[in-house]
Image (cartoon, rainbow over all chains, first blue to last red):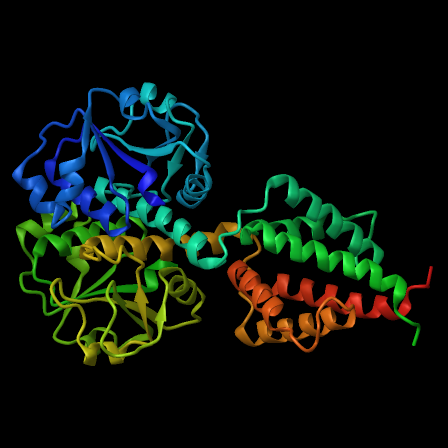
Length: 241
Length: 241
């Protein structure tokens, strides 16, 4: 459920941005808003821009620091549209959303920094990774509520895909399973004479890219393993013409 | 290039929304804004909310009707967060973005309707399909600039994936090719004894879902066809143990 995901706005200056962020969250089914030392809250402008998402504002929790806001969260992301001065693991919004939707237990939080200066390095260090929203290199000036909208949209998309996509709520294939699949695939391609065992690299890289992109669930993983096994058996069994 | 994509705002009431939409476009590298009979334009509020995207506003073209705004576009999408009274083909933002980025020649346009009532049925009929942004069923009140942000984000993502993702800028496999692939796949699964020819549906549906999700490029399509052909040949050739 996207409800276990907390959106944390840090030192937001313009009250309109808090309201617009609450509205953005609610359209995507998220409802946990945490505010770290907002300049004005609550306020009439904030409520006006929430345009009906006032229940999110009414329930919003205010904290003095980022540490306290995310104390109950097992997975914490920062956000940025800029390159940072300190190196920190960076992920795309899609990857972060996949990790959030796939996280077992514990809540997840996504931090949005100040309008002017983003997150401080100390706040960044609380984060497991940084979400970098890809923007126009010459105009990276993404409004905070717009950034919240994009992230909540990706999170909601991941939860929807889990609910409706596979229909049977299969868990994603693990990295270990995917490695077994690629080994099995490679051996099968050698067996049927499609892959030169001396130079398997290029073709296998393409196959990895394709199936990594598709993000298999465990049912699909089992189907593909079953097909590969059937190909091997078939090679031995079918009659010569 | 996302530059050939036109964002069309129809009868926008609040000037702030036009400015915020221009800012949202520019962060994602889109710069063609068309306005159909805006209530106020230009205006100080519009420019203030554009927050530096005033070049988009300065270049925005104003039209009296949707027909005229999209006259030079080969592919036109409407947008909606609601269920419509008339049935019209519906696509996700991701699918629309894929089609826009894959469209050869001619421009593409995405229409955003009035704040209060969206697009009229007549305007909808100009569209090839409707983009439905998935929203909270109980709160679908997406601000126009937020909707523009999500659509431009998906479009930009598709262009970026084409530039950097596959590295070799392969064109996507066509729908016709994908149908050939699924027929070939089904026949091969029957040949190796993995698929019961009497009830192929369920398994083939899962396989379609997997490969549709991965959106193959034409090189990947050729690799998979080659593997299927090698499996068939191998079934006839390999020695019995």
